[in-house]
Length: 140
Image (cartoon, rainbow, N blue to C red; front, side, top):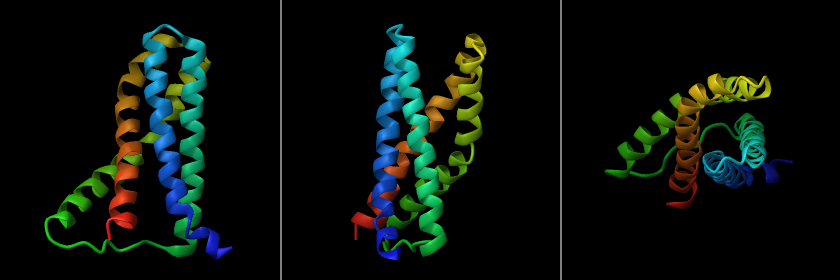
């Protein structure tokens, strides 16, 4: 089992990248007034994010945290990205659930008002998740 756990960071980065693609596509679809496709995209983004969270928790349960091996100017850059990522990542699940719930209940004005906050935060977290993976596992 543990050998497979070590491949989870790459899986997690892939799930974050897929979530980003779904979020951008969903945004484009709603701007083009294609709510059915928008719904599929946003549920895809939510599904990828929930799979990510599960995989992330499994990985850190078995492996723990990885120290950043870099030094010099890259180190404070990495930690500034990491701190902002983690801080905002805490907000994504409740924001996403509330935003999806409002759409489910067909409260579209309230959904749109909250989505204006949820989308950029969720996108930032998804993109910086990939950046953190690259910096932590691929840079050195």
